[in-house]
Amino acid sequence: MKKFEPIYNGLSAAFVICVLSALTFDSSIGVWLIFSFGSSVLIVFVFHDSEFAKAKNIFFGHLVSIIIGIFFNQYMGVSAVSLGLSVGLCVTVMMYLKIIHPPAAANPIIALFADVSYDFILFPVVSGSIVLIVLSSFINRTVLGRKPSNLIKRSKYLKLRRKKSKQNRES
Image (tube, helix red, strand yellow):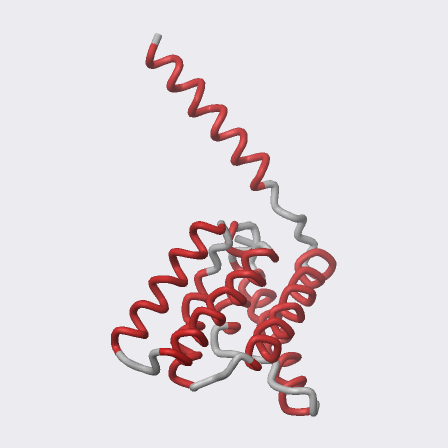
């Protein structure tokens, strides 16, 4: 780890949350920030090369999970059962759709406790996710000099290695 990397990551996360907060407090458009974005910025800066930090995972993970949370809020209300089932369904759907973003699993809890409606999908979830993705991509690539991940290449390489290893064991 580089000596100042934790400081750069912390400042980058602070900047993104400050922008979302300023948009929330200083614009008349609406709310741009939700609690789960705090852990999203940790993932995009500290674990920037992980699968969880991909733009599609951030956007669709937050989107799917807030829809699930609002659905449960509208039809079941807050209860131990609705909280558990909504988070469980959120995790299941993210896994099936291959859009896993761990902070998004908190969105059903947010939706149920805050008693939000479908308007919450556009502001703050969609709008905030887009700002978070754009700013973090810009900061990671230009300011911090990080290249987009080669996870796909690594994944294919590991699958090929496992296949060869399996063939060698069978021989």
